[in-house]
Amino acid sequence: MTEAGTAASSAATTLPEPVRQRVLTLAAHALGQLPATDVPAPLRRFASFAPAKRAKLSASVLGPILETDDHFRRLTAFQVRREHAELGDAVAEGIAVPAADPVEVAALAYLLRPDEWEQRIAAAAQLPVEVPRADDEAVARLSDQLDQARTETRQVRERLREQVNELKAENVTLRRKLNEARQRITGLQSDLEQRTTEAETADQRVEAARGEVERDMRRLRARITELEAVEHAARRTAGQERELASTRTRLLLDTVIEAASGLRRELALPPGGELRPADTVAGREPEAEPVGRIAPENDPALFDELLALPQVHLIIDGYNVTKTVWPTTPLHSQRQRLVTALGALVAQRRIEVTVVFDGAELSGPVQLNPPRGVRVRFSPAGVIADEVIRQLVRAEPPGRPIVVVSSDREVAESVGRLGARSLSATALITRIARA
Image (cartoon, rainbow, N blue to C red; front, side):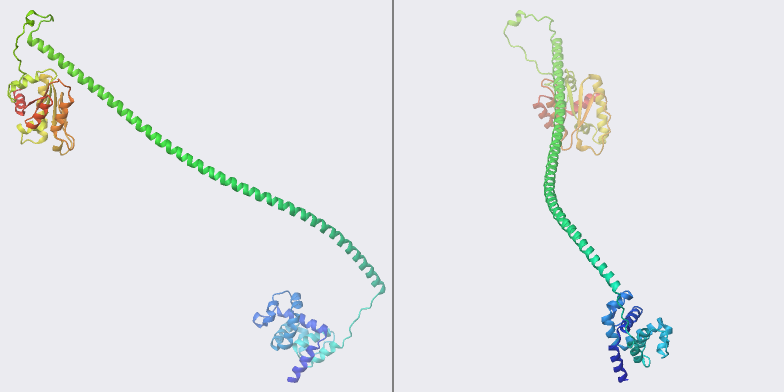
């Protein structure tokens, strides 16, 4: 077995060139059909190539592996025998096939290794090498064609060289233009970036200015609204003050006129205004006491005398009166009974009446129906009725007769200092009961 292996190796190394080329072609074709696990590592990268390319590129690797790797050679021989079944079976069984190509037989014998396979390779080596005979005329013709081809090639090369030179010159020009264009583009881009930055800055300034203008406009609108409100309030206040001044003046004038008329009637003065001789005689005249001042505060006659004064304003401390006469009655009933009784008094004497109640006594909305001519006021939160009474007295013009009905000594003294006359709640109750 060792001798056979040595002979095989010797024969393999001396394969005729045609046999070696055919062996490589058959093995390369079979290589693409073997499983990847059966292909040696150095040949795996050629397995995916086309057969012709695989045979050409893998020849330097495939030949030595076939010589040294018997397992791979047998796998390759099995695949080649499948593809060349008739001739492969004949070679494997040692049957001579006279019509077969000796090179093909030798290549199959090298792969299949039947008995006497070395003789088949040796027989292929003995084949004469066909040397083609040269035809002088053909050679001359081919020489002429070669010279013509060389001339044409030289001409083509010169034309191509000229075209290349022209293209190089054009390329230089185009490169120069390209550089100039790039420089212009770079400059334009810089200019564009600068202008974009300036535009963005301008937009920011415009937005800031717009925001400032809008804020100023809002402030101006708010100021205009505030001034309009102030103007409206001032006009309303001025109108109210003018109306109040006119009312106070008219009341005072009516009071003076009615007082003068009453005094004229009381004194029975003649219509004329001449000075009498007796008027020039010096002497002390009797002092006329003020109306009602010598009478007690609960005298009904004094109450009627004060109500007879012209343009008199009667101000009543509401709960001070009601709690004196109806102490156990609910407050809402006290209020209604008082204003109803005062309505009858107003109907008789045609006087101005204002009743003031403490607002702190209220536990809910007020349901009160005062009669015509009776004004009802409740003191606001944190203010007592006494203070509202004093405000009413101070609101009247000096000289108008004001009568305050309250049994509260502090109220009586404070309104007295303001020029008003005070009466007790008993006097009013007596006058109402009489009515």
